[in-house]
Amino acid sequence: MEELLRVEGLESGYGEMQVLWGVSLKVQRGSLVVILGPNGAGKTTTLRSIMGIIRPWRGSITFDGEDVTKLPPHKKVPRGLVLVPEGRHLFPDLTVEENLLMGAYTRVGKEDLSDTLELVYSLFPRLKERRSQKAGTMSGGEQQMLAIGRALMAKPKLLMLDEPSQGLAPKIVGDILETLVRLREEQGLTILLVEQNIAQSLKIADYAYVLEQGRVVLEGTSSELLEKEDLVKAYLGI
Amino acid sequence: MVDVGLVVANLVYGLLIGIIYGIATVGLNMIFGVLKIVNVGHGAFIMVGAYVTLLLFTLAGVTPPLTIVASMAVGIGLGLLFYYLVIKYLVDAPELATLLATFAIGVLLQEIVKAFMGADSRGFTWNLGNIEIAGVSVALSKVIAAILSIALLGFLYLVIYRTKLGLAIRAVVQDKEGAMVVGVDVDRIYAISFALGIMVTVASGSILAMYLQSGIHPYMGEIYTLKGFVIAVMAGLGSIPGAFIAGILFGLFENLSYVALQSIEGIQPLVLTRSIAFLLLLIILLVKPSGLFQR
Ligand SMILES: Nc1ncnc2c1ncn2[C@@H]1O[C@H](COP(=O)(O)OP(=O)(O)O)[C@@H](O)[C@H]1O
Ligand SMILES: [Mg+2]
Image (cartoon, each protein chain N blue to C red):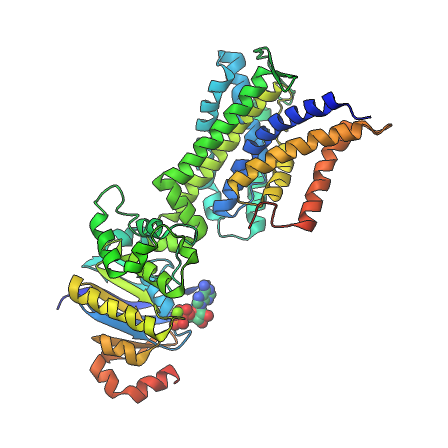
């Protein structure tokens, strides 16, 4: 398999405070990779640095064969690098459909969006029912579906998701993870998932990284990590 | 005794000047709404617009309503210039930095205009005769100024609620990080929004000049910065339609308080009317600091 994303020696932080101390990871095209780690380990900071929301201090990010280390988010989205951020960051006063159209912001006026919109509505029929409702009035689960739908509108090559199950009921978490599996199998989408839930995410992932205090402390295929479950749990402080 | 005719006349004039106040505050509120910065130099941009109209009319004979187009162009130019020169680097800085920077921009504009035009108060005459509104005789030029204000508000409304650019502006206002992850160039949206806000503000200076036709001098904007703050706080900082409605209320309030004060003997009503606006500001801040129209 060929590499879609390669992160090497990534260092980053906020102001003077360094959070990441040389994170390296790879995502093969068509695979589902999960990043595990306790609260404050730097998982969100890793995704935000890859996306360019915060500037990487050192290290390199290669996406689809191109060095994108210094590109801002609005130059990464059209290349197919798309993030579903932690906490969703929807536009609460825009309707569901306007949120979805904003997801295709870099494509509007250039391409036909109806196919992508239909795909999103077929994945999440609830969104179609509620298309003219304001995003802020929906339940947490529906908002997470909208956040994923909005990201799909950009036609991602790599979909990065930051704790999509946060604060949701177990049943809805299951639905969302299942949708990710479907997206990968049916659309060939490559996925980089940040999760705290070890068992469920290792079940669907091919490869996993464990992040602690801004460093990768453990990595391996899902089955390798499942064998070392005690070690993983120790790192996660469970 | 209160003279009914005088009350009606002040209602009509209050409404007209209120509409002008409204459009003169919309730009201030838009800039705050999107960039979260308070433009302390606001009034200086109004002054620039008044000079655009004064000069184009007196030197080139351009009819005042048309000068608004020139003011809009000047506003977009100044907005982009100051955004890329200064504001861009201060958007995420502490509030005091943007307050001082926009104050400095205002002073700079005042002094540049003064250097070229002198400090004298100027005016012009553009007389189209009078029409009657509710039995009150009003200069047609003032009515046209009010109508143009509403047209300008309508134009801004269309940009914000009916275009892809407007959707992106609203998205940035509602969730900046959300806008970033969908690929909006937030810096560019800030630049355009700042330029649009300054555009409306400079254009409102042209409308104001058309309305007053006098009192045009480099420091004329200061009182409108202050009134703009009162109106913006009434509206709730950031709300565009709120700013317009609050402007109308403020115009009515100012004129009616003038009537009320006039019936008190031994005081100068016009002088007191000015300070009563700030009394209003203090009361609103104490009673409803989030503004009258804010959820
Ligand atoms: N916006 C921010 N400003 C300053 N520090 C932050 C910010 N966001 C996160 N941090 C700090 O960075 C560290 C890593 O946080 P984060 O990447 O959010 O961890 P995780 O997503 O793994 O829980 C934490 O110590 C956190 O306090
Ligand atoms: Mg996180």
